[in-house]
Image 1: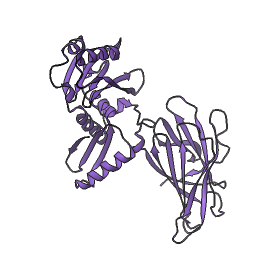
Image 2: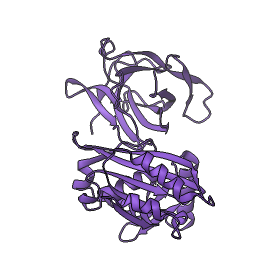
Image 3: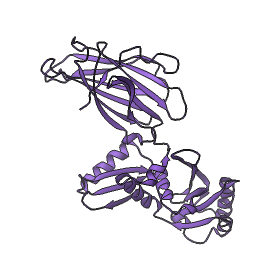
Image 4: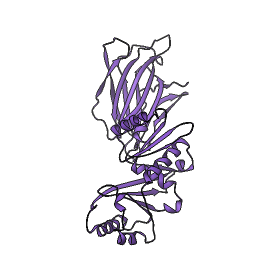
Length: 353
């Protein structure tokens, strides 16, 4: 784990880990608290994203073409290949990772194995820069491989690339600039779809954005209030980033007391439990003194990796003390937005402050 911490008026801690997961996120959060940094801004990113931020913060001549990172910090070689599609706006950047177990510490023919692997990885690619990191590159065992790598390429040796990348990431998030606005990283930890709520806003039907594609799934969070129509239903639109089918998912909130249209205020919290699972938490806030809140609560998960064909339900409970009744929030229907009328149910009204 690589950590960097900058201190000024607001303390910030950034961590680069091999792979971001719920247990790792929980462990790092606990560690930051134990260090007395409970009020710090916490940034947790994977190795690939660290590599992305490190690259785009270097002089552009170093990454005007593809960039290769060779990580030999373990028992075998791990590579990360950075590419950028400059035809898009913002520029879409990718990092392809691979393990090469034939390039393992202790082999007598290690230089030859490494050379063959580099020739295979590079092939006919235009690579402008190569980084060699990790204890495995100590010594002078890779002379033949180095001669090949240095042919029309810049080659750097070091050990703190990930931690520097984490620092650059924290800086860009705290103080967005032209770099963060001009380039977007589409890594394996990124949300692959735009999530929006179909609403009536200022008299016009529209899709109100909730979560943006390209956001780390563990950072994807939103809250919104809206007023239900008489059907006590609302729809989410899922628009995949990879060009997949746009889907409308209709959520029905059952068990609500009968009220006139637009007198039930719902507070919606939305986040993700993993890369492909959307979680919705909904609560009845009522409508002031006219229709008091019941604080009835629903939770629903939706798969956004592929269509959720089973119209399943999740348990909901009364939020009031001592209540023992239960209710359900269900996926009332799911359809392709391209082949069906998304306005079959009257959209809720956005509650603007």
